[in-house]
Amino acid sequence: MVGNTWSKETIRVAGIFGNDMVLQREAEVPVWGWAKTGQSIKVNFFGQTKNTQADADGKWVVRLDAMPASASGRTMRISGGGAAVTFANVLVGDVWVLSGQSNMGMRIDDCRDSAAVARAKYPWLRYFNQSWPFGTEQQPNLEPYRAKPAADVPAQSSWATTTPQNAGNWSAVGFYFAEALHRTTKVPIGLIQTSIGSTWGECWVSKVMRDTNPALAYIGTEFWTAPLKDPWFADKYIMYHAMVAPLQPYGIRGVLWYQGEGNTDPSVGHYRDLLSGLITGWREDWKQGAFPFLIVQLPKYAQPKDPWHSWEQLREAQLQVSQEVPNTGLAITIDSGGMNIHPTDKQPVGERLARLARALVYKEAIESTGPIYTDSTRDATGVSLHFNHVGKGLRAGGGALRTFEVAGADEVFVPAEATITGRNTVRLASPQVPTILQARYAWDWNPDCNLFNSEMLPASPFRAKIPGNSTESPAKGLDKP
Image 1: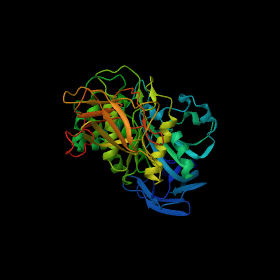
Image 2 (image 1 turned 90 degrees about the vertical axis):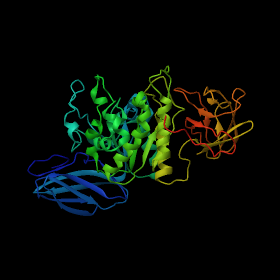
Image 3 (image 1 turned 120 degrees about the horizontal axis):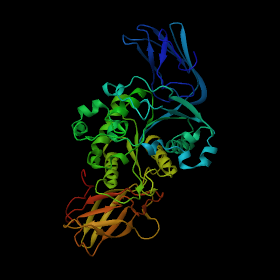
Image 4 (image 1 turned 135 degrees about the vertical axis):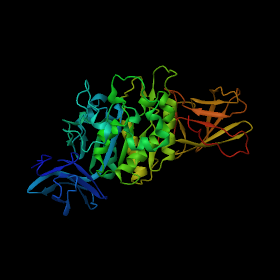
């Protein structure tokens, strides 16, 4: 048998494996499937032969030894019980999971980038697109995924090579990420697409994590008490059970996460704990250590503000997680976005994720992200804010610095005079606030902000408490919103 065809009397291989796939380089590679209890299974690939037997539940797993990157298409053969499954044109490189909601899934065609589609003759880039697991959108069937995680990916999920004929359907963020990363690594890249539009972050946390992490207990109580028009968008932990669990433990390099628009509502106060728990749970269940988790901070959103949502606090939570959870990074995009909740300028997003990966994962000596506030000091005439990730120094893009605000004891924020006074320092002063106790930057849905580093990467929005006098220790960012 060629590909993932099978018979219940013979063997089956998990649907994440297939023709044209990419296996993770320089790490142990699990390969698994199902057969009759006790059936002997043999896996041959890249000069290796591994043997095992199906257990009492019919599950079998072998683990290939770590392999170097290879852009030469090879054949994997899995045999047992007189039958065999063969996968052709298999590469070895780096595999990244793309997850989140619609901005991660947004296609290149939707970004109207015909030039990207035309140049997409990339035999080294392979794309795995999971099919819709819930039947029809009109009558979604969620029940199979409520009791326990799915054993396998949905039918019709498959790998494909990247050509101008199909690249328009690929995730734009994933495509630009892979394109930028490959210029440096020169190794094959596999992208596993597992995102669904309009989903809340709570959908992507496992039931086990929800039930064992006290900070996530809210998911089963205050969350979604009203009937929902599109229940699969919000049903708790369903996306994890249906679309993430069956990928595990496929060998991966890391995860790209672009989600948060759905959590700018009153659940925003939970997002810091939610995203931290999500990352911890994925790593625990994947059993491949603290793999990199690269987060896209939400861009601008040029719509009228309302008291029901807070894009500012969501961005802050994303920043906090990137500072607190090991081996995470933040791609700051506050200089992009606009009227549409689905901005089409996805190339900077993908390229900034690639820059994060190059610095954090591949250890290139480059600046990984834009300026991030660290602490502050005061004197008799004002406050100095200090930043890291400044490269050769802070820059103001297009005129004087904008959207810095300060407040005193009355907690009323007013615009501040902001000046770059050193490589990593911005000076704030205001005649209206002689004693500055709080400061913030780009604290709006659609801020007209212009602080960058020497690489022209934008600074992250933030808010901070300021020391009450010069003898106090430097102030870090505010605690949870």
